[in-house]
Amino acid sequence: MVSMARLFGTNGIRGVFGEGLTLDFVSDMVSSLGTFFGKGPILVGYDGRESSVIMSKVVCASLSAIGLGSSICGLVPTPCLQFATKKLGYGGGIMITASHNPPEYNGLKPTAKDGVEISREDELTVEDIYFKKKWNTSNKPRRIGRETRSIRTYLDGIKSQVNLKKIKSSRFKVALDLGNGAQAVTAPVLCKELGCDIVTINDTIDGMFSGRGSEPTPQNLNKLSQAVVKSKADFGIAFDGDGDRSIFCDNKGKILTGDRSALLISRFLLNKYPKSKVVTTLNSTSAIEEIAERTKSKVLRTRVGSVRGIA
Image 1 (cartoon, rainbow, N blue to C red):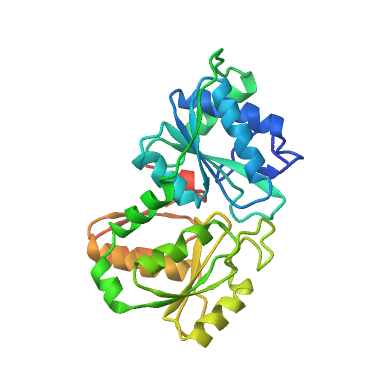
Image 2 (image 1 turned 120 degrees about the horizontal axis):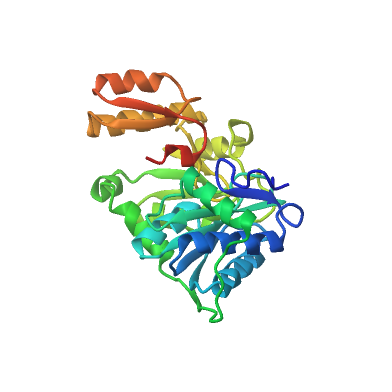
């Protein structure tokens, strides 16, 4: 149930749909978010949960009622919504998702115009607006549009950051466990455009996440391990419900822990960009400090939650 003392958790607002997270609550909270944003239009996206579509209608109607235009980009991964918010020039974004929570949950994850989740300080401002009911009003409802460029913008953005020629020439074979979630609409397309041969499991959108649940853990990724070994894939990737979390599998079917993946990524990036700063949570492995020391880099530790990592 949504707490009335503190509405935002470590990643937005979440609750059981129809109980703590009622449509009335969603309307009032979005009115508060819209008042905080101040200027539109606002980009609205959602994951594949069964309550997401009706919530998107309430979100857009609530924004319109306080004088902010909005555009729905439909079912997309959270990183896609965030990237498109910045790249396409929106005044902010609202992702309707409960991430890896069970299917009866849903939530709201607001994004600032720079594509980054709003800070904890901004969350407190929104909560103050909500509790005092000081949201804007308007007698001129604004337009609700459709944004069709989000996925292509997101995929092109990813490809602009990698060595396309090298990846395509490697002709990787990749096993994807899409978890019946939002990455089903983007990850296979990206892999194919990178010249990869793909094997997919749990690749249909299912708001109940019937394939393995919405959170990828080493304990529920046996099918991914088997798919990697059986297809002789180079590696495997599993995603959570809204596609902002992934876990990797090596070519022998071994699932890598989050710490192991973080170490591999940190080593790659710090070798490429020495004398940098690495932001990670307090519960991450201390081995990151060892890698940072070799490249004369600095590690900054934060509390758990993506908003804690905002500089």
